[in-house]
Image 1 (spheres, helix red, strand yellow):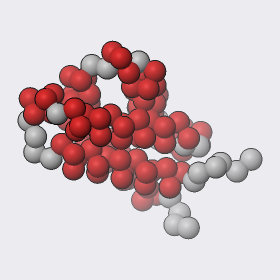
Image 2 (cartoon, one colour):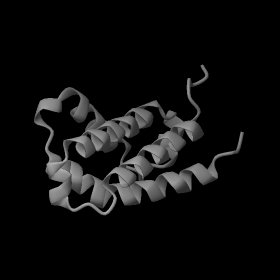
Image 3 (cartoon, helix red, strand yellow):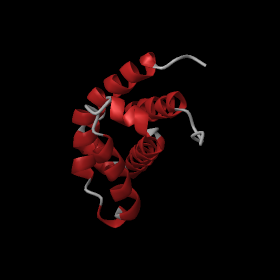
Amino acid sequence: MTPRYRDGELLEHMLAAIAKIHRYIGASSEDAFMANELVQDGVLRNLEIIGEAVSKLSLECRQAHQDVPWGEIAGMRNRLIHGYMSVNLQIVWDTVQEVLPKFRSQIRAIAHTLPKT
C-alpha cells in the first residue's frame, strides 16, 4: 500500500510549521508569549501540525531515525488536541525554545537524505 503522503512532503510540512512558530514568536520574551493569546494559538496549531505529520511518516523513516523523539512529538500533538483545556503554556514555551531547534536540525538532515522526486 502506498502512503498517502511521501516522507519528504511530510518533513517539509514540519519545517514549514517550525518556521511559522519562529516567525510568530520572533524575539519575544516568555512574558510576551504568555500574554499573547493570538501567538499562543498560532504556536499551538503548528505544533499540532508537526505532530500530525510525524504520525503519518512511514515506519521505515521513523525506524531509520530512532534518535528523533517521534513518539514524544506525536504525543504532544495528542495532548494539545485532546487535552486542550489543560495545556501548560510553560511546557509549550520550553518545547519551542529547547526542543524545536534540535528537531529542526534533525528534520533538515533527514530531508537531505531522501531522493528528490
